[in-house]
Length: 564
Image (tube, rainbow, N blue to C red; front, side):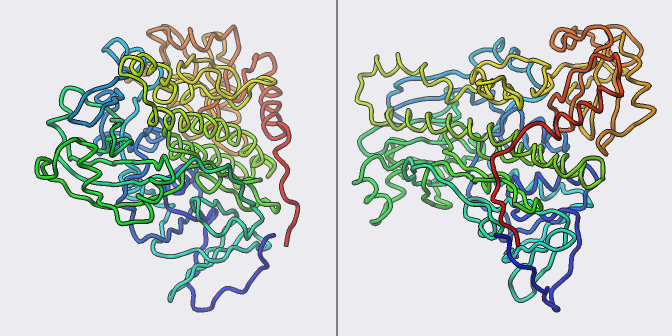
């Protein structure tokens, strides 16, 4: 039930915003960026005084890198991390310095890299969550503010929106129209507004050791994103965080009740575990230093509803869903949640769309999160079985290809749809991405030439809606000039031809992937997904129908109807 309205503390700092975000992790900070990009005044409340030093998530997939490119920080993220093409291999070994059991190449050659590069203007990167957070904070626009070191303790509904009150000696009260809860798995506010948590059976408990060391004597020439180690002392994975700076994670799952006791109940020699994973004594491992250790339960959680019954509070990222790290989709899914939600909040706040548009957020994102959760769970169970395997070396290596969908997931990254056919999954093929400009899909990337500058089709809807059309669709330009807003956000039209004066499809990739006919146009949403393919026979009516389609696109899972 939504908490009753309470009187703000007279001594508290009073802050006004259009949206208040609770939680300053990657999802909350990304939400602030995306909202600010639409001109929405946003305040983020974060309990931690500074980003965590523990790396946690490390892989930024190509879709998320596209979004960071829109924020103008992709180059800094890449500089702060490791290009995935430099570590595009998964290695299994007895110890890092021991016998290699198997290897799986994600990008096996220059040709494979070029094939992957066709799909997006950017490539994935390994960059730890704490570094991404720091860059997002450092690059916040003026109309977004982060207040650190404060815990949001109360969220109440007011006649005009929401009020969030923080604790401490100098409390803060934020008045806003909407609240986005990005408070993570252990946040306390969801239950107070009726967002009931659900959880699947946990898949086990893991020990994480974050350390620095120069491991180049054993990694040079076989650089990998992950080194799975299987020996009598350690069965786990060395995760590449930053090999240049010598930063690593050792993750060890408890595979038996005895290991549960060993890792989580008794005294643990973490240096000894690192030695066993590497296969060398600590004296032989140059620069070995442990920074932090944590243990956590691996599993999937969710919410019965992502939006409160009064409609004012929405959950995103780990506050809405968590799943095992096997696949690397946690942080990426949260940032993409924020991107989907931000333009919809902006459209409602600017009066261009009814509040019912916000229901499409859960309707679209929940199936994607649930698919990612199921896939991550399958990956986790497969890896658990592999770590417990006693197969001989030849059989072990022969079966490794079966695990490709765990590590090679371009189809899952770029190919998910918000409008699957009846009975179809939101992802048709986890490994292989097949570009399509049909409704619900991410509008495919194609390089275009504009007065000598190269831009991506993914750039055209960065701040609003974009109508992409061919030589016979010039009337769409007039439509956009006469009414340059759609659902309260900017509307532009781009006529793309092989040799015209405007945007040129010099290589023909746009024509091939978008397959436009005559006066047809593809209407791309501000989150880069196709809203509709419009025939162009009655442009204004077709635009109205497209807006109605997403607002009234079908039911969402039933929300608790209790209110204050």
